[in-house]
Length: 251
Image (tube, rainbow, N blue to C red):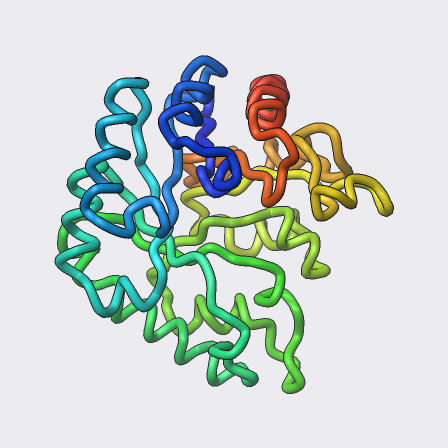
């Protein structure tokens, strides 16, 4: 059975964190994925560590901003050690910081590779998590995701499949092309056109349009270790968490 984890960003609008982690434990999750706001200060880190322990959950993966990764190496390493993070993923680049050329994205890949070195030296994995913009061709014809990985040939990939689809990509083609980099996958679903508009068009796993059964067959041939369930804006995070892990276990 794969490790079905849970991206805690999905529950950011449903505090307190202690209740979220207890809910996930009851639903059958064994692990979760963190994001920046959860380890913004020492008190939050202590709280998170204590709540993980009390609910028997682990945090093998975590998202850290590129600024934090570059500017607070000791802090990131301390957080990873405290929470048991084994692989770090840089999750996003704000629109005003995004390159406009293939060369610019290759330089981003080089930047990420340089940023990864102290974490790799500490025995941690390090990769990039995509959204949709990396799949959309630039004016010079470059696909940003390709350029990022050309610039950072050792970067791992946390493949957010639904964002690949939103970006106009064929996920099976991308899995075939870059599958040897995939060490984690974000599993989420896209509602049919016009549905779930109050949830930004996302759906619980198995309730949308993404062919997850076919994708799982392809993904199991990659080095993927973690399947992270995510919904960017659920109205009810417990509903999403429970329905999605039940679906995931049938794939």
